[in-house]
Image (cartoon, rainbow, N blue to C red; front, side, top):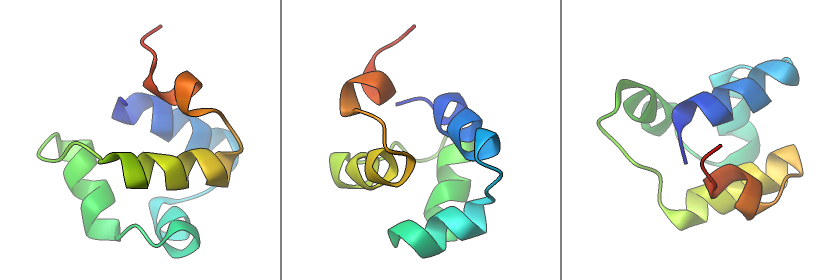
Length: 64
């Protein structure tokens, strides 16, 4: 999953990384590391993001 896809979903819903962190339990530090490219999210975190934004895992993981 690319950070840009996550960022678009977040921005489209008017959320901040802090709000996403609070709602998913994913730490703000993890989101920052992902943005900088030093971290690739594991499937458990991708599932939390998919659930929060009510999108399929397929839509998050597929390249456009």
